[in-house]
Amino acid sequence: MANLWSGRFAGEPDKAVFDWGKSLSVDRRLFDDDVTGSQAWAEALGRAGVLSEEDARTIHRGLEAVREEVHASPAMMADAADEDVHAFVERQLVARVGEPGRRLHTGRSRNEQVSLDFRLYLRRRIPLLQQRIADLVQAFVDQAERAGGAVMPSYTHLRRAQPVLTAHVWMSHAAALRRDAARLETARDECDLMPLGSGAIAGASYAIDTAWLASRLGFTRVTTNSIDTSGDRDFVASFLYACALAMTHLSRLAEDTILFTSEEFGFFELADEVATGSSLMPQKKNPDPMELVRGKAGRALGLLSGWLATMKGLPLGYNKDLQEDKSLAFEAEDTLAGCLATATAVVRTLTPRPDRMAQAASGLLLATEVADYLVGRGVSFRTAHEITGRIVRDLYEAGRDFSSLALSDWRRYDARFDESVLRAVTAEAAVAAKRTPQSTAPEAVAAAIRETRDWLDAVRR
Ligand code: ARG
Image 1 (cartoon, rainbow, N blue to C red):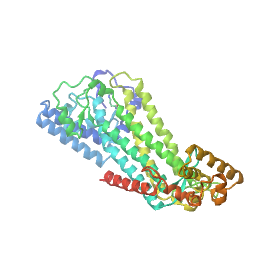
Image 2 (cartoon, helix red, strand yellow; image 1 turned 180 degrees about the horizontal axis):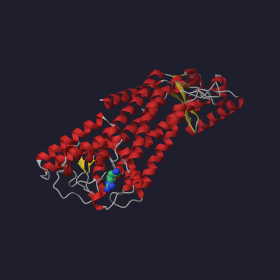
Image 3 (tube, helix red, strand yellow; image 1 turned 60 degrees about the horizontal axis):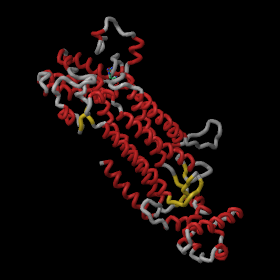
Image 4 (tube, helix red, strand yellow; image 1 turned 135 degrees about the horizontal axis):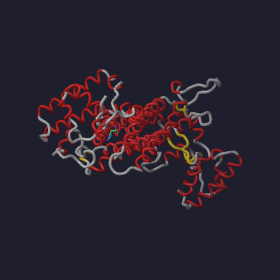
């Protein structure tokens, strides 16, 4: 089978080497975008007077027929021997419409064609990832609402820090995932430049109306420099970065879920449907799905660093190295989509154990409340910290906590304690005492839930 460039060569390419360099098995995902872009290019050539109206129409219809046929029998493309999706589409077109099809590539290069196709692809696929993020955020919000006034410890250095509403913990994951949706939007915006007219590297010698072509293809801008366009895959790096950071957040969620459902923490029970057993130890209920999410995050970070490493050594303009971008980006996309769905299934079905959480949220992690209590009675924070530290040290040594102190015990440390201290030093009081909008105060968390529900409505619209 002749390929798109055989004229210059006396013989056939080495079959093994040619087959090894083919990308159709990967870039076939760009098929629809290639057809869409080629139809628009034919129209642009017609408008520029390069193609007759009739040829432009013939090409357009021919491409539509190719699209329909491939949709009806995908094996047609799966079994094809073409070098890449662009060669496949052109060969199919020429097979259908003959000579006019051989005029389609006038003034166009695969260098800009692949840039166009990939931009179109990411522009239509990123919203699907954002919808999956919304599904997970929805699961967080639902858990947060169900948690009501339940309290649990928050951790810094993985040591108990301060009591917080369980709902606040859920909403913290929601906050990170919303940044991921926004970051994907930024990557999508970076794809929003129409590259055609760049030619192979120097531009086109035909008066193509690139502004018209951009709006015809749903872009708001046109790329500004043909050399830069030819070798620019920054938008791929941005997409991989957005995926890598989203995967990082999912990995941290996975880690929290694995810890909090363990015997040691026991704050949540993992649903049977999303757990696995051990072939040897009958008692085991393992969190495999979340461990896989955590594991796949490592790979997703590698996709980004691998791509940056590929780009860094390239001279200006298109280089075939750039062909590697598709498999990395598709893997990132599939990984993120799969992990989001799995994380959503796990989060949705977690059963809280409020008794265990409340128990862990009592005790010495209320020390900040004791210090704040003294500050409320005019003591400087540093002095309050020292007094409280002494109480903590004594209690720790005695294996007790604040709840074991009678008023007389408190007053032995400082006369400014009165009977109100017995009510102030509880997890519930600690949570209710917070005053800032990003805090775990019940009103603040309720407002965050409301605001996130509004965000969900907007994203789903
Ligand atoms: N399959 C190629 C890629 O993905 C398309 C561009 C090929 N251009 C070329 N001059 N060989 O990058």
